[in-house]
Length: 103
Length: 410
Image 1 (cartoon, rainbow over the protein chains, first blue to last red):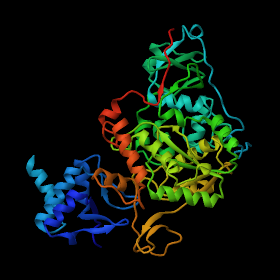
Image 2: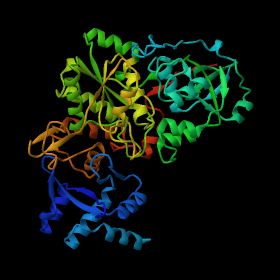
Image 3: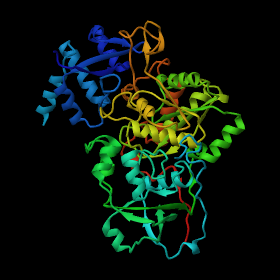
Image 4: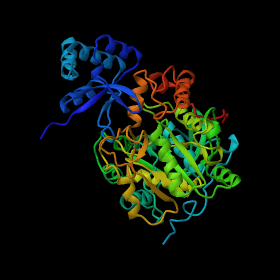
Protein backbone atom coordinates (compact mmCIF):
# COMPACT_ATOMS: atom_id res chain seq x y z
CA UNK A 1 0.00 0.00 0.00
CA UNK A 2 1.48 3.35 -1.00
CA UNK A 3 1.91 6.01 1.64
CA UNK A 4 -0.58 8.85 1.71
CA UNK A 5 0.55 12.08 0.08
CA UNK A 6 -0.66 15.55 1.04
CA UNK A 7 -0.04 18.19 -1.64
CA UNK A 8 0.99 21.70 -0.65
CA UNK A 9 -0.85 24.10 -2.96
CA UNK A 10 1.33 26.95 -4.15
CA UNK A 11 -1.14 29.31 -5.81
CA UNK A 12 0.37 31.11 -8.74
CA UNK A 13 0.09 34.88 -8.48
CA UNK A 14 1.60 37.18 -11.12
CA UNK A 15 5.00 37.35 -9.46
CA UNK A 16 5.24 33.57 -9.17
CA UNK A 17 3.98 33.06 -12.70
CA UNK A 18 6.77 35.27 -13.97
CA UNK A 19 9.38 33.14 -12.15
CA UNK A 20 7.87 29.95 -13.55
CA UNK A 21 7.76 31.43 -17.05
CA UNK A 22 11.37 32.62 -16.93
CA UNK A 23 12.46 29.15 -15.73
CA UNK A 24 10.54 27.63 -18.63
CA UNK A 25 8.74 25.28 -16.26
CA UNK A 26 5.13 26.06 -17.01
CA UNK A 27 4.56 22.30 -17.23
CA UNK A 28 4.84 22.12 -13.43
CA UNK A 29 1.65 24.14 -13.08
CA UNK A 30 -1.86 22.74 -13.22
CA UNK A 31 -5.11 24.53 -13.96
CA UNK A 32 -7.67 24.04 -11.21
CA UNK A 33 -10.85 25.72 -10.04
CA UNK A 34 -11.99 27.48 -13.18
CA UNK A 35 -8.55 28.45 -14.46
CA UNK A 36 -6.58 29.08 -11.29
CA UNK A 37 -2.95 27.99 -11.62
CA UNK A 38 -1.26 25.97 -8.91
CA UNK A 39 1.95 24.05 -8.36
CA UNK A 40 1.47 21.13 -6.01
CA UNK A 41 4.40 20.04 -3.89
CA UNK A 42 3.70 16.59 -2.45
CA UNK A 43 4.41 15.94 1.23
CA UNK A 44 4.56 12.57 2.95
CA UNK A 45 2.79 12.04 6.27
CA UNK A 46 6.04 12.70 8.16
CA UNK A 47 6.73 15.85 6.10
CA UNK A 48 3.15 17.05 6.63
CA UNK A 49 3.48 16.57 10.39
CA UNK A 50 6.83 18.37 10.45
CA UNK A 51 5.45 21.32 8.46
CA UNK A 52 2.33 21.63 10.63
CA UNK A 53 4.40 21.58 13.78
CA UNK A 54 6.87 24.20 12.48
CA UNK A 55 4.12 26.45 11.10
CA UNK A 56 1.18 26.27 13.51
CA UNK A 57 -1.13 28.48 11.44
CA UNK A 58 -0.93 26.00 8.56
CA UNK A 59 -3.67 23.44 8.26
CA UNK A 60 -4.16 20.08 6.65
CA UNK A 61 -7.65 20.18 5.19
CA UNK A 62 -8.51 16.61 6.10
CA UNK A 63 -12.25 17.03 5.52
CA UNK A 64 -12.38 18.23 1.92
CA UNK A 65 -9.24 18.60 -0.15
CA UNK A 66 -6.59 16.55 1.74
CA UNK A 67 -4.13 19.35 1.00
CA UNK A 68 -1.84 21.42 3.20
CA UNK A 69 -3.02 25.00 3.23
CA UNK A 70 -2.17 28.28 4.91
CA UNK A 71 1.59 27.91 5.05
CA UNK A 72 3.10 31.42 5.23
CA UNK A 73 3.53 33.05 1.84
CA UNK A 74 7.33 33.25 2.23
CA UNK A 75 7.47 29.48 2.90
CA UNK A 76 5.60 28.84 -0.32
CA UNK A 77 7.93 31.22 -2.17
CA UNK A 78 10.89 29.21 -0.87
CA UNK A 79 9.25 25.93 -1.90
CA UNK A 80 8.62 27.35 -5.35
CA UNK A 81 12.22 28.54 -5.68
CA UNK A 82 13.42 25.06 -4.73
CA UNK A 83 11.07 23.41 -7.22
CA UNK A 84 12.29 25.68 -10.00
CA UNK A 85 15.92 25.11 -9.02
CA UNK A 86 15.45 21.33 -8.94
CA UNK A 87 13.10 21.39 -11.96
CA UNK A 88 10.95 19.02 -9.90
CA UNK A 89 8.10 19.44 -7.42
CA UNK A 90 9.34 16.84 -4.90
CA UNK A 91 11.08 19.35 -2.68
CA UNK A 92 9.25 19.20 0.67
CA UNK A 93 12.00 17.04 2.21
CA UNK A 94 14.74 19.30 0.89
CA UNK A 95 12.95 22.36 2.26
CA UNK A 96 12.72 20.76 5.71
CA UNK A 97 16.40 19.77 5.58
CA UNK A 98 17.39 23.34 4.74
CA UNK A 99 15.16 24.65 7.51
CA UNK A 100 16.82 22.27 9.98
CA UNK A 101 20.29 23.28 8.77
CA UNK A 102 19.50 26.96 9.44
CA UNK A 103 19.01 26.25 13.17
CA UNK B 1 -43.61 14.38 28.11
CA UNK B 2 -42.65 17.74 26.57
CA UNK B 3 -43.29 18.87 23.02
CA UNK B 4 -39.89 19.51 21.44
CA UNK B 5 -41.54 20.71 18.23
CA UNK B 6 -42.80 23.91 19.87
CA UNK B 7 -41.36 27.03 18.30
CA UNK B 8 -39.74 28.81 20.09
CA UNK B 9 -38.15 25.91 21.98
CA UNK B 10 -40.19 25.37 25.12
CA UNK B 11 -43.07 27.47 23.81
CA UNK B 12 -42.02 31.03 24.62
CA UNK B 13 -39.13 33.37 24.02
CA UNK B 14 -37.25 34.01 27.21
CA UNK B 15 -36.70 37.72 27.81
CA UNK B 16 -34.69 38.67 30.83
CA UNK B 17 -33.50 42.18 30.03
CA UNK B 18 -34.46 44.54 32.82
CA UNK B 19 -32.62 47.89 32.85
CA UNK B 20 -32.06 48.50 36.53
CA UNK B 21 -31.02 51.69 38.38
CA UNK B 22 -27.65 51.63 40.10
CA UNK B 23 -29.11 51.98 43.58
CA UNK B 24 -30.81 48.61 43.25
CA UNK B 25 -27.50 46.96 42.35
CA UNK B 26 -25.38 48.44 45.11
CA UNK B 27 -24.13 45.97 47.68
CA UNK B 28 -24.28 42.93 45.40
CA UNK B 29 -21.15 40.81 45.18
CA UNK B 30 -19.38 41.80 41.99
CA UNK B 31 -17.88 39.14 39.74
CA UNK B 32 -15.99 40.28 36.65
CA UNK B 33 -16.70 38.14 33.60
CA UNK B 34 -14.91 37.50 30.30
CA UNK B 35 -16.18 37.90 26.74
CA UNK B 36 -17.47 34.32 26.34
CA UNK B 37 -19.53 34.58 29.54
CA UNK B 38 -20.88 37.99 28.51
CA UNK B 39 -21.96 36.55 25.15
CA UNK B 40 -23.67 33.64 26.91
CA UNK B 41 -25.50 36.03 29.25
CA UNK B 42 -26.83 37.90 26.20
CA UNK B 43 -27.80 34.64 24.49
CA UNK B 44 -29.80 33.61 27.54
CA UNK B 45 -31.38 36.97 28.40
CA UNK B 46 -32.44 37.89 24.86
CA UNK B 47 -33.95 34.45 24.28
CA UNK B 48 -31.55 33.00 21.71
CA UNK B 49 -31.13 30.04 24.08
CA UNK B 50 -34.82 29.67 25.09
CA UNK B 51 -35.99 27.87 27.19
CA UNK B 52 -32.85 28.52 29.26
CA UNK B 53 -33.32 31.32 31.76
CA UNK B 54 -29.86 31.08 33.21
CA UNK B 55 -26.75 28.99 33.62
CA UNK B 56 -27.52 25.32 34.14
CA UNK B 57 -27.99 23.74 37.55
CA UNK B 58 -26.57 20.30 38.38
CA UNK B 59 -29.66 18.30 37.35
CA UNK B 60 -29.75 20.06 33.98
CA UNK B 61 -26.02 19.64 33.39
CA UNK B 62 -26.23 15.94 34.21
CA UNK B 63 -29.22 15.44 31.96
CA UNK B 64 -27.65 17.40 29.08
CA UNK B 65 -24.42 15.43 29.37
CA UNK B 66 -26.06 12.01 29.66
CA UNK B 67 -29.33 12.34 27.73
CA UNK B 68 -28.95 15.46 25.58
CA UNK B 69 -32.03 16.95 27.25
CA UNK B 70 -32.64 19.41 30.05
CA UNK B 71 -34.06 17.88 33.24
CA UNK B 72 -37.47 19.06 31.95
CA UNK B 73 -37.11 16.82 28.91
CA UNK B 74 -36.50 19.51 26.28
CA UNK B 75 -33.68 18.57 23.93
CA UNK B 76 -30.51 20.51 24.76
CA UNK B 77 -27.07 19.47 23.64
CA UNK B 78 -24.40 21.82 25.02
CA UNK B 79 -24.05 22.52 28.75
CA UNK B 80 -23.95 26.24 29.46
CA UNK B 81 -22.21 26.63 32.79
CA UNK B 82 -20.84 29.46 34.89
CA UNK B 83 -17.59 28.42 36.52
CA UNK B 84 -15.76 29.83 39.52
CA UNK B 85 -12.95 28.44 41.65
CA UNK B 86 -13.61 27.20 45.16
CA UNK B 87 -11.22 29.94 46.32
CA UNK B 88 -13.24 32.67 44.58
CA UNK B 89 -16.45 31.34 46.09
CA UNK B 90 -14.98 31.40 49.60
CA UNK B 91 -13.20 34.70 49.15
CA UNK B 92 -16.30 36.47 47.84
CA UNK B 93 -18.61 34.73 50.32
CA UNK B 94 -20.86 33.43 47.54
CA UNK B 95 -23.70 31.33 48.91
CA UNK B 96 -26.76 29.62 47.48
CA UNK B 97 -29.76 31.94 47.64
CA UNK B 98 -27.60 35.01 46.97
CA UNK B 99 -27.34 37.21 43.90
CA UNK B 100 -24.20 38.20 42.00
CA UNK B 101 -23.60 41.30 39.94
CA UNK B 102 -21.67 40.25 36.85
CA UNK B 103 -19.49 43.06 35.56
CA UNK B 104 -18.10 43.31 32.03
CA UNK B 105 -15.76 45.98 30.72
CA UNK B 106 -15.65 47.14 34.38
CA UNK B 107 -19.34 48.06 34.28
CA UNK B 108 -22.39 46.42 35.87
CA UNK B 109 -23.84 44.12 33.23
CA UNK B 110 -26.05 41.31 34.55
CA UNK B 111 -27.21 39.59 37.70
CA UNK B 112 -26.92 35.89 38.41
CA UNK B 113 -29.18 34.30 41.01
CA UNK B 114 -27.11 31.75 42.93
CA UNK B 115 -29.58 28.89 42.93
CA UNK B 116 -26.99 26.17 43.26
CA UNK B 117 -23.23 25.76 43.65
CA UNK B 118 -21.97 22.38 42.48
CA UNK B 119 -19.15 20.35 41.00
CA UNK B 120 -19.32 18.11 37.95
CA UNK B 121 -17.08 15.49 36.38
CA UNK B 122 -15.41 17.48 33.59
CA UNK B 123 -13.99 14.35 31.99
CA UNK B 124 -17.48 12.88 31.61
CA UNK B 125 -18.78 16.21 30.30
CA UNK B 126 -16.06 16.33 27.63
CA UNK B 127 -16.43 12.67 26.68
CA UNK B 128 -20.20 12.85 26.21
CA UNK B 129 -20.45 16.29 24.63
CA UNK B 130 -17.42 16.09 22.33
CA UNK B 131 -17.04 12.33 21.99
CA UNK B 132 -13.41 12.62 23.06
CA UNK B 133 -11.25 13.67 25.98
CA UNK B 134 -8.36 14.67 23.73
CA UNK B 135 -7.14 18.02 25.10
CA UNK B 136 -6.28 19.12 21.55
CA UNK B 137 -10.02 19.35 20.78
CA UNK B 138 -10.94 23.04 21.38
CA UNK B 139 -14.17 22.13 23.19
CA UNK B 140 -12.42 19.64 25.45
CA UNK B 141 -9.74 22.24 26.14
CA UNK B 142 -12.46 24.71 27.13
CA UNK B 143 -14.12 22.11 29.40
CA UNK B 144 -10.85 21.19 31.07
CA UNK B 145 -10.12 24.87 31.67
CA UNK B 146 -13.33 25.34 33.68
CA UNK B 147 -12.77 26.13 37.35
CA UNK B 148 -13.79 23.44 39.84
CA UNK B 149 -17.20 24.85 40.81
CA UNK B 150 -20.26 25.82 38.82
CA UNK B 151 -22.96 28.32 39.77
CA UNK B 152 -26.39 27.61 38.36
CA UNK B 153 -29.19 30.15 38.29
CA UNK B 154 -31.16 32.75 36.40
CA UNK B 155 -29.44 35.56 34.51
CA UNK B 156 -30.86 39.05 34.00
CA UNK B 157 -29.23 41.76 31.91
CA UNK B 158 -29.45 44.90 34.05
CA UNK B 159 -27.38 47.25 31.90
CA UNK B 160 -28.04 46.42 28.24
CA UNK B 161 -25.04 46.80 25.97
CA UNK B 162 -24.76 49.12 23.01
CA UNK B 163 -24.03 47.05 19.91
CA UNK B 164 -21.32 48.81 17.92
CA UNK B 165 -21.10 49.35 14.15
CA UNK B 166 -20.93 47.44 11.89
CA UNK B 167 -22.45 44.72 14.12
CA UNK B 168 -25.46 46.83 15.14
CA UNK B 169 -27.11 46.43 11.75
CA UNK B 170 -27.10 42.66 12.22
CA UNK B 171 -28.31 42.47 15.83
CA UNK B 172 -31.70 40.78 15.71
CA UNK B 173 -32.60 38.92 18.91
CA UNK B 174 -35.37 36.31 18.46
CA UNK B 175 -38.27 38.70 18.99
CA UNK B 176 -36.92 41.26 16.50
CA UNK B 177 -35.91 38.56 14.02
CA UNK B 178 -39.39 37.03 14.13
CA UNK B 179 -40.94 40.47 13.66
CA UNK B 180 -38.76 41.03 10.59
CA UNK B 181 -39.82 37.68 9.11
CA UNK B 182 -43.48 38.53 9.76
CA UNK B 183 -43.17 42.01 8.16
CA UNK B 184 -41.70 40.43 5.04
CA UNK B 185 -44.30 37.69 4.97
CA UNK B 186 -41.68 34.94 5.29
CA UNK B 187 -43.20 31.79 6.74
CA UNK B 188 -40.57 29.27 5.69
CA UNK B 189 -37.03 30.40 6.42
CA UNK B 190 -33.95 28.22 6.08
CA UNK B 191 -30.98 29.04 8.30
CA UNK B 192 -27.35 29.04 7.23
CA UNK B 193 -24.75 28.59 9.96
CA UNK B 194 -21.35 30.00 9.13
CA UNK B 195 -18.03 31.21 10.48
CA UNK B 196 -16.60 31.84 7.05
CA UNK B 197 -16.54 34.38 4.26
CA UNK B 198 -18.75 32.86 1.55
CA UNK B 199 -17.25 31.11 -1.46
CA UNK B 200 -19.27 29.55 -4.26
CA UNK B 201 -19.69 26.30 -2.30
CA UNK B 202 -21.48 28.23 0.46
CA UNK B 203 -23.52 30.21 -2.06
CA UNK B 204 -24.73 27.05 -3.75
CA UNK B 205 -25.31 25.30 -0.43
CA UNK B 206 -27.68 28.16 0.41
CA UNK B 207 -29.33 28.20 -2.99
CA UNK B 208 -29.74 24.41 -2.93
CA UNK B 209 -31.23 24.47 0.57
CA UNK B 210 -33.65 27.22 -0.46
CA UNK B 211 -34.89 24.97 -3.27
CA UNK B 212 -34.97 21.86 -1.09
CA UNK B 213 -36.97 23.59 1.62
CA UNK B 214 -39.19 25.40 -0.88
CA UNK B 215 -38.38 28.31 1.40
CA UNK B 216 -39.48 31.91 1.33
CA UNK B 217 -36.08 33.09 2.45
CA UNK B 218 -32.60 32.34 3.75
CA UNK B 219 -31.31 33.62 7.08
CA UNK B 220 -27.52 33.80 7.12
CA UNK B 221 -26.58 33.75 10.78
CA UNK B 222 -22.80 33.95 11.25
CA UNK B 223 -21.37 33.00 14.59
CA UNK B 224 -19.45 35.88 16.15
CA UNK B 225 -17.25 34.96 19.08
CA UNK B 226 -13.78 33.95 20.17
CA UNK B 227 -11.31 33.98 17.33
CA UNK B 228 -8.13 32.11 16.59
CA UNK B 229 -5.17 33.45 14.60
CA UNK B 230 -5.75 32.80 10.92
CA UNK B 231 -9.59 32.92 11.10
CA UNK B 232 -11.33 35.52 8.98
CA UNK B 233 -12.05 38.68 10.98
CA UNK B 234 -15.68 38.94 12.15
CA UNK B 235 -16.43 42.10 10.21
CA UNK B 236 -15.36 40.48 6.94
CA UNK B 237 -17.60 37.47 7.60
CA UNK B 238 -20.73 39.49 8.35
CA UNK B 239 -20.31 42.13 5.66
CA UNK B 240 -19.30 39.67 2.95
CA UNK B 241 -22.47 37.64 3.42
CA UNK B 242 -24.48 40.80 3.16
CA UNK B 243 -22.66 41.86 -0.01
CA UNK B 244 -23.79 38.64 -1.74
CA UNK B 245 -27.31 40.02 -1.59
CA UNK B 246 -26.37 43.65 -2.25
CA UNK B 247 -24.44 42.53 -5.34
CA UNK B 248 -27.48 40.62 -6.55
CA UNK B 249 -26.42 36.99 -6.08
CA UNK B 250 -29.51 36.72 -3.90
CA UNK B 251 -32.63 38.80 -4.30
CA UNK B 252 -33.43 41.33 -1.58
CA UNK B 253 -36.75 39.63 -0.87
CA UNK B 254 -35.31 36.18 -0.15
CA UNK B 255 -32.20 36.79 1.94
CA UNK B 256 -31.15 38.47 5.17
CA UNK B 257 -28.17 38.37 7.53
CA UNK B 258 -28.07 38.60 11.31
CA UNK B 259 -25.47 37.59 13.87
CA UNK B 260 -25.27 35.04 16.67
CA UNK B 261 -22.95 35.76 19.58
CA UNK B 262 -21.51 32.36 20.38
CA UNK B 263 -18.15 30.78 20.93
CA UNK B 264 -17.93 27.71 18.75
CA UNK B 265 -17.40 24.49 20.69
CA UNK B 266 -16.70 22.45 17.54
CA UNK B 267 -18.92 19.74 19.03
CA UNK B 268 -19.92 18.39 15.60
CA UNK B 269 -23.30 16.63 15.84
CA UNK B 270 -24.16 18.02 19.27
CA UNK B 271 -23.38 21.53 18.08
CA UNK B 272 -25.58 20.94 15.04
CA UNK B 273 -28.50 20.28 17.41
CA UNK B 274 -27.68 23.45 19.32
CA UNK B 275 -27.58 25.45 16.08
CA UNK B 276 -30.96 24.04 15.05
CA UNK B 277 -32.58 25.03 18.35
CA UNK B 278 -31.14 28.56 18.33
CA UNK B 279 -32.24 29.15 14.73
CA UNK B 280 -35.70 27.79 15.55
CA UNK B 281 -35.82 30.40 18.31
CA UNK B 282 -34.99 33.02 15.68
CA UNK B 283 -38.07 31.90 13.76
CA UNK B 284 -36.50 29.60 11.17
CA UNK B 285 -38.35 26.51 10.02
CA UNK B 286 -35.42 24.78 8.30
CA UNK B 287 -31.68 24.57 8.90
CA UNK B 288 -29.09 23.54 6.36
CA UNK B 289 -26.36 21.11 7.35
CA UNK B 290 -23.49 20.48 4.97
CA UNK B 291 -20.52 18.21 5.41
CA UNK B 292 -18.58 18.20 8.67
CA UNK B 293 -20.94 20.69 10.29
CA UNK B 294 -19.29 22.34 13.33
CA UNK B 295 -16.53 19.76 13.20
CA UNK B 296 -12.82 20.14 13.75
CA UNK B 297 -9.92 17.92 12.70
CA UNK B 298 -10.98 14.30 12.27
CA UNK B 299 -13.00 13.89 15.46
CA UNK B 300 -16.35 13.39 13.72
CA UNK B 301 -17.55 11.46 10.74
CA UNK B 302 -18.26 13.77 7.79
CA UNK B 303 -22.02 13.32 8.09
CA UNK B 304 -22.39 12.69 11.85
CA UNK B 305 -24.29 15.99 12.09
CA UNK B 306 -26.83 14.67 9.56
CA UNK B 307 -27.46 11.39 11.35
CA UNK B 308 -27.97 12.79 14.83
CA UNK B 309 -31.35 14.22 13.83
CA UNK B 310 -32.59 10.68 13.05
CA UNK B 311 -32.21 9.84 16.75
CA UNK B 312 -34.07 12.87 18.08
CA UNK B 313 -37.74 13.77 18.39
CA UNK B 314 -39.18 16.36 16.01
CA UNK B 315 -37.41 19.59 16.96
CA UNK B 316 -39.81 21.83 15.07
CA UNK B 317 -37.07 22.80 12.63
CA UNK B 318 -36.41 20.62 9.64
CA UNK B 319 -32.78 19.67 8.89
CA UNK B 320 -31.93 20.18 5.22
CA UNK B 321 -29.04 17.77 4.77
CA UNK B 322 -26.75 18.48 1.86
CA UNK B 323 -23.71 16.71 0.47
CA UNK B 324 -20.80 18.33 -1.31
CA UNK B 325 -20.68 21.11 -3.90
CA UNK B 326 -17.57 21.11 -6.07
CA UNK B 327 -16.16 22.71 -9.18
CA UNK B 328 -16.58 20.41 -12.18
CA UNK B 329 -14.38 21.27 -15.18
CA UNK B 330 -16.57 19.09 -17.42
CA UNK B 331 -19.81 20.80 -16.42
CA UNK B 332 -17.79 24.05 -16.35
CA UNK B 333 -19.42 25.21 -13.16
CA UNK B 334 -20.30 24.46 -9.57
CA UNK B 335 -21.93 21.04 -9.35
CA UNK B 336 -23.61 18.96 -6.67
CA UNK B 337 -22.31 15.56 -5.64
CA UNK B 338 -25.68 13.85 -6.03
CA UNK B 339 -26.21 15.25 -9.54
CA UNK B 340 -22.82 15.45 -11.21
CA UNK B 341 -21.34 12.14 -12.41
CA UNK B 342 -17.84 13.54 -13.04
CA UNK B 343 -16.57 12.57 -9.61
CA UNK B 344 -13.10 11.72 -10.96
CA UNK B 345 -12.73 15.19 -12.45
CA UNK B 346 -14.32 17.06 -9.53
CA UNK B 347 -12.21 19.80 -7.97
CA UNK B 348 -13.08 20.21 -4.32
CA UNK B 349 -12.55 23.40 -2.41
CA UNK B 350 -13.02 24.54 1.13
CA UNK B 351 -12.82 27.66 3.25
CA UNK B 352 -9.22 26.83 4.17
CA UNK B 353 -8.29 26.42 0.52
CA UNK B 354 -9.81 29.78 -0.40
CA UNK B 355 -8.06 31.44 2.57
CA UNK B 356 -4.84 29.90 1.32
CA UNK B 357 -5.38 31.38 -2.16
CA UNK B 358 -6.00 34.85 -0.71
CA UNK B 359 -3.04 34.51 1.64
CA UNK B 360 -0.87 33.80 -1.43
CA UNK B 361 -1.96 37.12 -2.95
CA UNK B 362 -4.15 35.57 -5.63
CA UNK B 363 -7.64 36.74 -6.57
CA UNK B 364 -9.75 33.60 -7.01
CA UNK B 365 -11.86 33.22 -10.19
CA UNK B 366 -15.35 34.72 -9.94
CA UNK B 367 -16.98 31.31 -10.34
CA UNK B 368 -15.33 30.24 -7.10
CA UNK B 369 -15.29 33.47 -5.12
CA UNK B 370 -17.33 36.51 -6.08
CA UNK B 371 -15.24 39.60 -6.89
CA UNK B 372 -17.52 41.77 -4.76
CA UNK B 373 -16.83 39.45 -1.82
CA UNK B 374 -13.08 39.59 -2.48
CA UNK B 375 -13.12 43.41 -2.63
CA UNK B 376 -15.20 43.62 0.54
CA UNK B 377 -12.83 41.27 2.36
CA UNK B 378 -9.87 43.44 1.37
CA UNK B 379 -11.70 46.62 2.42
CA UNK B 380 -12.51 45.02 5.78
CA UNK B 381 -8.84 44.10 6.17
CA UNK B 382 -7.90 47.77 5.90
CA UNK B 383 -10.77 49.09 7.96
CA UNK B 384 -10.95 46.54 10.76
CA UNK B 385 -8.16 43.98 10.44
CA UNK B 386 -4.91 45.97 10.77
CA UNK B 387 -4.27 45.31 7.09
CA UNK B 388 -5.15 41.62 7.11
CA UNK B 389 -8.47 39.87 6.46
CA UNK B 390 -7.25 37.20 8.87
CA UNK B 391 -7.09 37.41 12.63
CA UNK B 392 -3.65 38.46 13.86
CA UNK B 393 -2.23 39.41 17.24
CA UNK B 394 -3.28 43.08 16.90
CA UNK B 395 -6.86 42.05 16.10
CA UNK B 396 -6.96 39.70 19.09
CA UNK B 397 -5.73 42.42 21.43
CA UNK B 398 -8.44 44.94 20.58
CA UNK B 399 -11.27 45.46 23.08
CA UNK B 400 -14.59 43.69 22.40
CA UNK B 401 -15.63 45.32 19.12
CA UNK B 402 -19.20 44.04 19.22
CA UNK B 403 -20.56 45.64 22.36
CA UNK B 404 -19.95 48.49 24.73
CA UNK B 405 -21.42 48.36 28.19
CA UNK B 406 -22.68 51.85 29.13
CA UNK B 407 -20.95 53.47 32.08
CA UNK B 408 -22.89 53.10 35.33
CA UNK B 409 -21.78 54.58 38.64
CA UNK B 410 -22.62 52.30 41.54
